[in-house]
Amino acid sequence: MPTTVHHAEFEKLAADTLARWAAVPVTIASDIAGIPIAIDPRIRPLRVFPLGKRMVGQAVTAWCERSDFGAMLHALDIARAGEIVMVDAQGCLQTAYCGEILCGYARRKKIAGLVVNGAVRDIDTIASWDDFPLFALGNTAKGPLGKERGSVNGPIAFGGVAVSPGDVVLGDNDGIVVIPLERSAELLALGEERVRMEAEWVAALEDGGTLVGTFSVPEAV
Image (cartoon, rainbow, N blue to C red; front, side, top):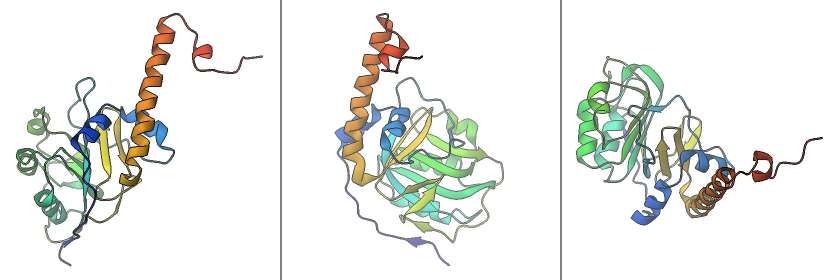
């Protein structure tokens, strides 16, 4: 069956909203969500992020059949600057789904990042780019075997987390979380409050406070 492209419509978040999300560590976003939003921790960035830097953008989704990268090609074509392409390759490590050519194309389009639940290749070149984040499950030299199947911009299950087009994707050296678009404003406020709270904890400890007192732990008996 040919690749299916769904024409998903979703609210495009303001640049300042995404910038505020970029100031929230993945660890904090995961802690305050109240639902599972952290994807499989085996999916790692090729390049270490500088201190305080993160990948953030709204999701474009692609579901690929094993060893077929057709859906990914369509997704990269329709993705807009600032968006993040989430490619569910079903954990396939036998063939790579992208390399220097596809990632270079995405980089020139100013796509904010690419996340692949599968293998990639040409990692030396891609890891040398400091302006294009790529997360992947692994790498292999062998290329894809097909380009005809899959689906784009439908809901997917990605690394144990439900992802829909437009969801907020946040990634750093601790991993990736996917924030449902409809809860973005609520969770952003909670995340910013937690950032402030953690700064207060650090200040209290640096001022000589104890862990038990700072974290309001019940006294031991």
